[in-house]
Amino acid sequence: MSDKGLWVKIDGIDMEYEAWLLIRLFFKDEYFKFYSENEYISGSVLFVQVRDEGSWQCRAEFYSYLEGRDVIQSISRGLIQPDHSSLKTVYESDINEPGGGILKSRKILAGSVIYDVLSRVTGKKLPYGALTGVRPVKLAMVCLKDGLDRKGTIDMLMKATGMSSEKAGLLCDVAGAEMPYIKLDARSIHLYIGIPFCNSRCLYCSFVSYPTEGFRSMIPDYIDALGKEIRFVGQMVKENDLAVRSVYIGGGTPTALDGYSLMRILELVNESFDLNDTEFTVEAGRPDTITQEKLQILKKNNINRISINPQTMNASTLMTIGRNHTPEDITGKFMMAREIGFSNINMDIIAGLPGEDEKMFRYTLEKIEEMAPDSLTVHTMAVKRASRLHENVGMFRLAPDSVTESMTEMAGISAKRMGMRPYYLYRQKNILANLENTGYAKPGYECIYNINTMEEYQSIIAMGAGAISKFISHDGKKIERTCNVKEVAQYIKRLDEMLERKKAFISR
Image (tube, rainbow, N blue to C red; front, side, top):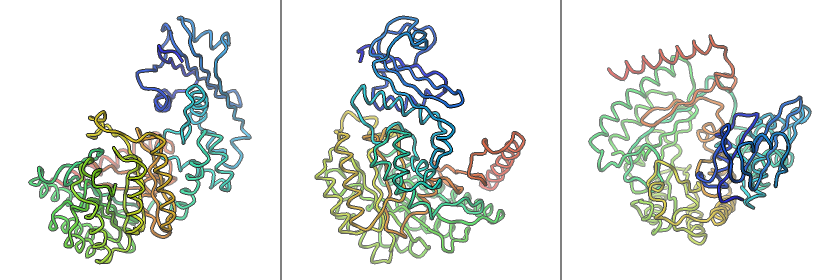
């Protein structure tokens, strides 16, 4: 490796952004740059080339040190021998094999040769190999739907991406758990309602969320505006004969609202939508926002799933991350919810919180097991750009990759002891150890909303500040891939008309 940095040249495919996401897992951003024509090179070189000639090839070559203005031309002509190289060739017959659909992506295969070369150069292994995307379970789903068994799926994922057998197995297990819950259905929709208020802002939080203490005067106006939006969406759902399969009220922390405001929103949701046999989740995430009155309001309004989120059961860490409650508050509010009759309670924890080690994380798991929730979501610490942690990251000690990975493994074992299995999974940018967030649940307690958010088979209509809707076409593909120009124009026109109606309705 040259101390003058790394030059990257990609030929035959447009994937600089995807390559940047992957390369930055090996090197700091300032260490590498992408080559522009006629630049003078002095340093290491990564040359990536994709060729499509009936079969197609992805090649990555690494040169420890090159210097000159004609370096790339010399590499392209084969005049210089690389220090490390990797080549993958895909034939039509490979794509037609079960699970071969994932080999159609040139970007995935090009990423895998980049990963192969850089892992040899640096000695660093990444659990998900070349994958940098949010939804890796989709690849396992392709393999299973093609008829591959668990072993065949694991082998295909490892071949295509370079991921570890353990992560390939996890993706396979999640896909298998999700299969009974997902199907294309143009009539089925899910609702998300955002409450952007919380008692305090956690160190790692990047959501749209404001402290109730400073913004209390704004809550009545927000509830009024949100109520208009809920009524409008309810009218739209009825007019289009849509069926609501799940409702998720998140934030922020919905239970940070006073009892009266919480009651108003929940009553309006029940009035505006037919919620028979519908999964209805409310985030009661902060124990310091939970009261007996609010739990009874939730119960009265058909909420059948709540989430009480410790993040950690260590008092010192709770103070560090800015949560104004104690471990005893968590246990007490959980038991209160059980006594009131909530039989489906999720708990969230975070692996790799600042200052925590494996012993502290193990303690959290032990306390969670004592409470015996019905599902457990294990997040891996991510340094998000909009968080206070990102602004002050140098002030905190983050767990090393090996420790964070050990924590997530411990969590999986703990979930299994509680009779749970992994049922949904997603990844984030800047996540520690390049790992994942995994939801575990006892069979029958899987969150339908979470699954559909990740797998994108049914539309989600979102209401409230910071909420984003997601519309799925009838064949499950993006509009631009399935419609001609005229159809796209008509679709956009319908959306514009709906938006104008919504604005007029809310302004009344």
